[in-house]
Image 1 (cartoon, rainbow, N blue to C red):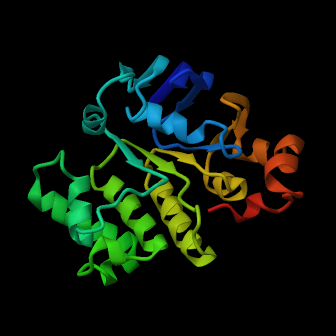
Image 2: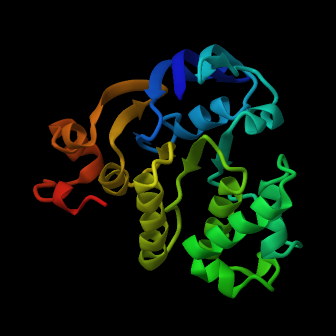
Length: 244
């Protein structure tokens, strides 16, 4: 589905990604873990066309999308739920979701998908008559997530869905990720909480200062002494038995 080869990314003269290579197969959930500033968000921005200073290869189903305009990448099937959420506060919850489907013209399908999103996130259904700016932080995260799904993406990029949220909201959001995984959705997940990421992903990559320093299955990474010491904080025996 997605192949990245030797990707370099820059902010002016500062190099943020230093020869990254990874892949995501159809139906996989793949996570990127690492500390703040490791390059995780930059990676997603490069894939979705939000960052223009890039070199290397980015292939979506064998089609090069590197440096392609972001709106065209969306039309090709890349959905992006950003860390900043970037909802439209003056618009209603349904209007924000409709904007996620701006590339589509099938009104019946859009209506059906909106009801599906409301089923995934019942809190949004309860607030469908509210302006997005009146939602809590967790509800805004759900809205950004749902908006990305409204485009029927072939691959979904999720950037730090747990950041700054209460444990109960985090549990709800990751339950949705687990459900999407069971339905065969393809997801590239950036998440600073390594335990959450490894619990729902099939495979993962560890980024440090713009480089991939480790990769493997979730089980392999969870049992890696380096990952345990740097990101998990303690032994994770029994942790994988709780995977979604």
